[in-house]
Structures are given as structure tokens and as C-alpha cells.
Image (cartoon, rainbow, N blue to C red; front, side, top):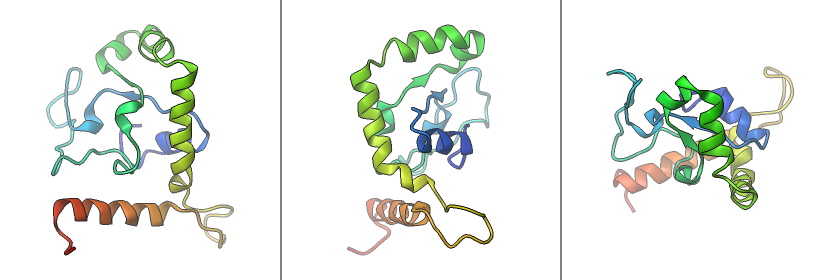
Amino acid sequence: GDTITSRSMASSMVANCIPIRVGSRLRGHCTSPCRKGWGWTITNGLVHLPYSDTIPWDMFPEVDEANFTANPHQTLMRDVFQKYNLSTKNRLRSIMQQVRSGFIYGYGHPLESQQFGDAIPFIWKSIVLHLNASGALPS
């Protein structure tokens, strides 16, 4: 997915799969094959990735969009699977384990369940941290 609310990124994190970012749009860049208007403008240096105040996204795999579009298998083999050894993968999974509950809104039936996940507290924490960092909140 290419949005901060993309179910595919959240689903991969919850399933203990390491998410692979394709392209640099989530970091506010728009390189080919991205076209004008496809990228996002970064506000105050904030990254358009979930919980960027908690997750060191620069440690996670990102592949070049043009290379991936032309040859996905070779790009993944070269840029991800050969580059990330077992130790690195375990470190990324450890990070994911710490934030996994932040991707879960609730359990059970979507309308009837009273079992809530930690997504809302995680979102509020991120908002407060970003507001503090921008100076919008009094100290």
C-alpha cells in the first residue's frame, strides 16, 4: 500500500512480515515513475508513515519503484532478500513486536465487540509527540 492507513502495511506488521516500501513517496519524494502530484509534501519534516516517531522506518527495506516495476522479482532478490541477513530481519521483527498492537483497532465483530486494540492510544501518542516537536503545545 502507499498510504499511511493502508491495510497491507498494517496487516504485514501484525502478521510479523517485514513491510517493503516501494518507491519514496511516503518520504515525500516523487521520483520516476511517480508523476507530479503523486508524491506528498512533507510538513515540518514529518514522514508520511505510521508512528514515525516510534518506528525507525529508515531501517526497513525500500526498493526503487522504477526497478520494481520493470523487474519485481530481481529487485526484491537484490535489494531486500540478499541485503537483509537473519540478524537484521530479527532486529526489524523486534521493532515490529514493540509496535504491533498499535496497528490493531479491535478484536472480534467490528460493530459489537468491546475488545479494543491499542491503535487509538498509539495515534494520540504520535499526535502529541508531533505537536510537542513542532512547538504547538506549551511545555
